Each structure stands twice: as C-alpha cells, then as structure tokens.
Amino acid sequence: MRPIPRQQDQRLTELFEAYAPRLLVYASRHAPRTEAEDLVAEAFATAIRRLDDIPAGGEMPWLVGCVRKLAANQRRRQSTRDDHWRAAVRDAWHVDPADSPEQAYATRDAALAALAALSETDREALLLVAWEGLTPDQAARLLGLTPNAFGVRLHRARRRLETTWEGTHAQPVEGLS
Image 1 (cartoon, rainbow, N blue to C red):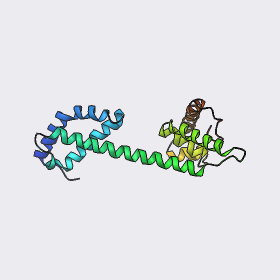
Image 2: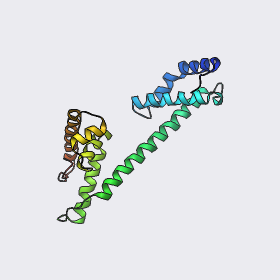
Image 3: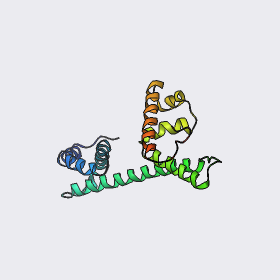
C-alpha cells in the first residue's frame, strides 16, 4: 500500500475523530460489538482508498452507507455459510430404517434446529467429530488448538447441544451427543 499524502492523511484523521464513535454506535445496531468494530475499520479502510469520493459536508452519510453495505455483505456471507452446513447435513442425513418417514424428518429437523441454535464454534466442533468422523486430536490439529483445548470445547458444545435438545421432544441423535 502506498503512503497517504499529508493532506489526505489529515482529512482521514479528521474524519475518524469526528465520526468513528457515532459510526460505531450505528454499526453496533447491525452486528455484535467486535464485528461492529471491524465494520468501522473496514469503512475507514474503504475511505482511505476512496477519499476523493467522500463529499464535503456529506461525510457521515457516506460512511454510514459504507458500513451499511459492509454489514449487508457480512449478513449475506453468514447466511450462505448457514445454508451450506444445513444443506450438507440435510442431504447426508442417514435415516433409521426403523423410523417412519415422518419420524425420520422430525428427528432430522429437530437436530438441524438444535445445531442452528449453537454458536458456529460449537457447531464446528461437533460436526468435525460426529459428522466428518475426525478424532478429537485430528480436529484439534485442524483448528490449531491443543487436544486439551479442543476437548474442553467439544465437551461444552455437547453440553449445550444436550440443553438445546432437551427443549425438543425428540430422542438424541447418535453421534452428536
């Protein structure tokens, strides 16, 4: 990245000092605090690249528009990730031959709902072991964690899944709990 000329650096500093706190409040309405901070940082990174496009007197609306678009893109990416894991689990679901079709679908849908209620971190830990068939040590290496750290994560994820599952009237799904 090339250095910013002094005049542009001054304008960017002024924009940041004037609008960053208000922009963070706006971003916090669209994302959790840590993600909101990232949205504001990305908006100012965009501002660096497009400083000449920011209208004098219209800085705040321009920056809000930037955060708004970034947040929408983030939501679309998250939605796409959610669609992918749900479709993969739904498509590869193994039906117990003893179950009626209605029971099989009800169990699958309850499992999907319970998994969806978990954090992405919990869901990933459970699916790596129960769905992909990795050992906890393999999953730990994959995620860059120590086996103990992953073991704790997996244990907690299983407890949260059980708690979520108790809210349904279905039997626990083999492998996930």
